[in-house]
Length: 73
Image (cartoon, rainbow, N blue to C red; front, side, top):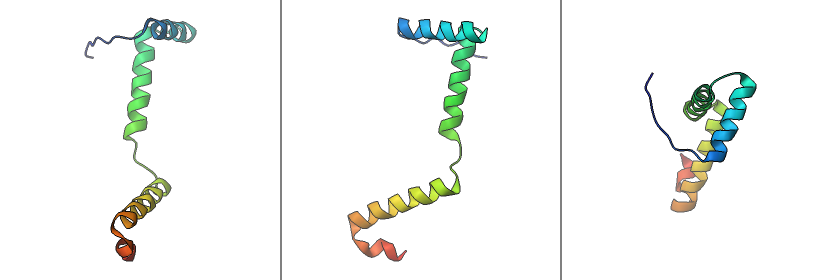
């Protein structure tokens, strides 16, 4: 593992320490777990429903910008 240094507000550090105490873990374990969850959430593939919805939004944006020519596609 790599050692890094970050700056956090004192209140956040106190909350982290409280969470660590409840979980009987170290502060760094809580931070590592939170970052891993954040990264998984941001890099997870989207499902088919989300992809269709995003595609529909893009179609509407393109149609609004360039007229209805894109709806034929």
